[in-house]
Length: 290
Image (cartoon, rainbow, N blue to C red; front, top):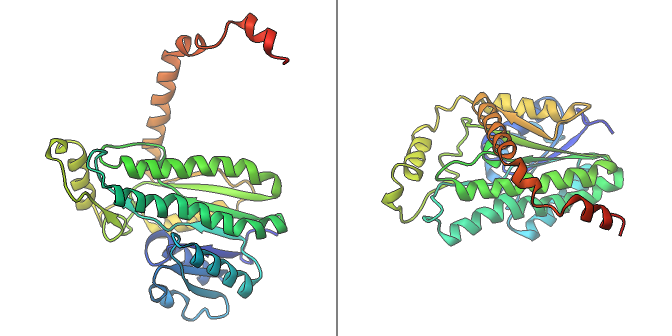
């Protein structure tokens, strides 16, 4: 089945931001959409007027019972789920030393374990049809680290690693995987969905705290347009050759390219040391066939 206007999309985290704009665009053009949020009242306006093609559900991705119920309800209503968009999650701005154990674990529960649980719940039906797409919303912070967001970086690096492995596992089964890596966009990421340290450490004033203040003051002025981002995601999913990664925004593109260049520079500079860590060639040749 082609991933076009006939596709059924299940999107987590539709109350605001990318999830909301994506659901709106898809519904306006006639797609079937399962729009979810922790509080279902936050998405009832989205589905209003689209009663034949939309389903609003309460879904907290950290709660296994709600994941099972939402998946079952989507399949019962539409018969299939063609595209899963793992968008739910939140940010945490803290220096590594400032990190609060509860806040760190809560973020990983949503950003990583909830994403993985949703994926496991939806994959059986996709495997059965040998068709589908998994869209995991990562961040440029899933490839590039910055002071003050180490724990958020870690959660998104986990999403990247999981997604890369998943893509190789499901590609022979006719299932696509797309990792979306946005830069700064005008969503509420730096507002309602962002947590900060309970006990700041002033020694990080010029690094983690300074970046935290810039990020929060920047809210509402980011160059990225969530509507254009949502349109780009749809285009990539429906493309015949969907990329594994979709970087969104000029800032993200520059940051990712800079990171790749820096990694290549380090690897090239230390190539002799890296290759010298192997057994001598003769020893490797002697044991290669065993």
